[in-house]
Image (cartoon, rainbow, N blue to C red; front, side, top):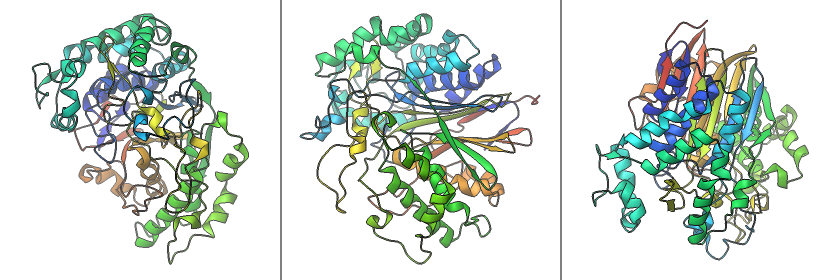
Length: 529
């Protein structure tokens, strides 16, 4: 827990929290700060972004995608979807014979959206000049950053294939052996790429020389991504959705995020008044049952441009639907997965990065970027320094039903230009029309369950504990960790990491994951106006 009074940034690396605050100090707003912090994370990424060590992606930049939920100082919301898209020649059976091709190699690469997303957010909300947001990341990439013990461990996991590639060795083993704790890692090619984008704008990444170079590398290695895939990519403005939970307004993102599921689960739990008795076994049981009904509904979701189920999406976030579901929650027992009426099996999603920002005018951003597996596709373009994603793995693959007879979700099958379903769940909470909380999580499929734990915070009963105990909570420093039922079909038996900022009585309280750094939050410490 870190206290501040003027603006705050909660992100998974201390150096990048400081970058975000420096942008605020220069006169930037929450959107400026979020973009600069995310670019910094893309260079350093020194932190576990999943609940399993193999679900990590270190040192990736630019070839990501994600979502940004923005609250303007006047209380209006924007939701920017810059999720990756499948290439135009992709098809639903392309990984049936060999699913590993969706995880490693050039076929696993989806069209990136991050730079277009940042461009759109900056055009609509930014205050500083575009190039100013890139300067910290350029400096870090060029001058280098220190290898942590965590980085060293992750590099060791990949040693076998890194040491077979001159391109990877040039960065992570320049002296013939893998970088160890305390060594400096430099990324000069990436610094030059960032500098070009800073000076020439996003088009150079999607249409210009950088785009041509990246596509050349991808296709030489057997990929199907084309220059047209990059040129045609657009970040999308999508509607937000909200519900009221004990008088507080919770706003989140629509599909293809899991935001609607968060609202559905909060509606189910609202009538239980969880704060009255606190974290009893019964209340935790009720939360787990809400998780399972929510995850069952999630199997019906996907890219809204490819589905015709908006009425169903609207229904699921209503209080009326929650009341019907609550009648099926037993306080005495739990059930096998078919009881919760999932339509399909679901694919696990993997590594993500979240950051939360509040500025001096109560502008706020909850931004989550998708990364996926360790070192993405394992393909790097040495000329640009870009490491390519493996986001095609987030699609469902047609195949054998699971042990409960549920087939992979056809709503999330690969299709040309389609965006895969995501566990990402950014949220912004208001009370009496005033900003109160900005949060989101990392940890792939555990994001949604982690974010739902905020329900204990929202009711106020555990607020004091939430604010005084996070320093001792190694797994989740925003809200106290709950166990999760080890149900193989619905979700992992763990929770992810939450990065959040609370605004209370004119002061900011910043909570971040403390697993891998001494501090992951930073504040601009002046009196609020």
